[in-house]
Image 1 (cartoon, one colour):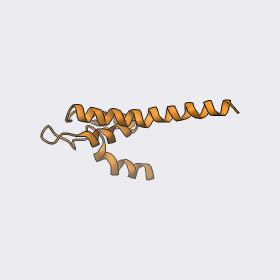
Image 2 (cartoon, one colour):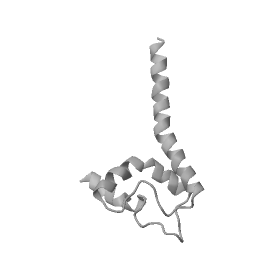
Image 3 (tube, one colour):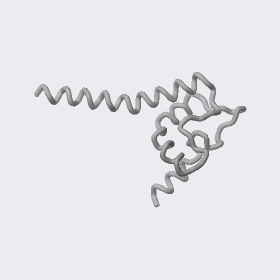
Image 4 (cartoon, one colour):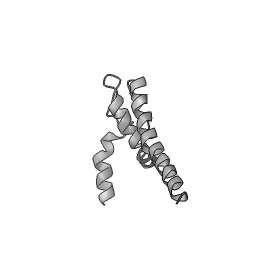
Length: 92
């Protein structure tokens, strides 16, 4: 029940949800948000038509930069943290 309420609340934040238009495209910060929620967008997109990982109505390069910075920082940063942590524990 709680998860359904969260999804309903954030459904307007997902890419492809008709929030953006060619006249008002998604920008850098929207790209960053969409990068952070990309895994969740993928799962929700399976069940709800129109939800995508990437917003088609975007500003171009700036949106792409925000999207990829969020993806790399969110998921790449975690992987680098874990790798460094394993390396430290093996030297004890």
